[in-house]
Length: 323
Image (cartoon, rainbow, N blue to C red; front, side, top):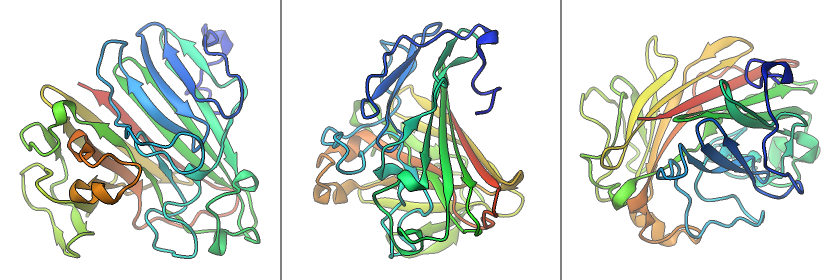
């Protein structure tokens, strides 16, 4: 664990008050100095809530029909996607295996420090990923890896870092994405004056609904209208990190920054914008009308990603700030 991310006891770190009873219980971490908090489920290392203070509205959307018993991925919050986003390889499940398995808490990683915030780290070894495997990642795979997820909050900001280390004897290709669901207040996700994404001008767009591909050359923000939106925005030219503003309702904004590197070399970060709108009715774990309450803005390493060589790591980080 990065000592700069998780301060040691010599930096006045105090144990968090949460008692971790079993490996399957959700864990709530509170930053005492700011009263900000988040909840993470060991199933999928899945963050289901984040609030900047006890009286502040939630930052993340969680479906009222989300299944939280470990029988299927949790709908809402921040699902982790690896080694694929979507299902470009149909031989194993959509979005990979991180969100479908129980992770372990890294011993001693939970902290609550006045200056450095509060957080925790979780880990999943491939041998412990018993669900959502198949194809080249099946039980007889020649690949091996260890995945780590670190979360830190400090008042109005939250940092998520997903790291994968190739611990096997073969290099592998991959994609990686944080499928973040933001709560849109007052049910105004289809009101483009208060729910939008800014900062994607100059990106190549792949529209997964219409099949169109084009370059976004407009200064206008991305908005949700009256039908499903599912688009991948890929950086062009010298763009590397993702830096966008997400409107999440009247008077609410999120500043989202994301960056990633493979073996220390920066990799371009794509952004996915998604809202199911009419498709919500066909989703068993999503309320028919809840498309009004959310927008997904999902940073990921999706294009021009080098293979992960033996002994090397990929590190991917998003920082969410409520303003």
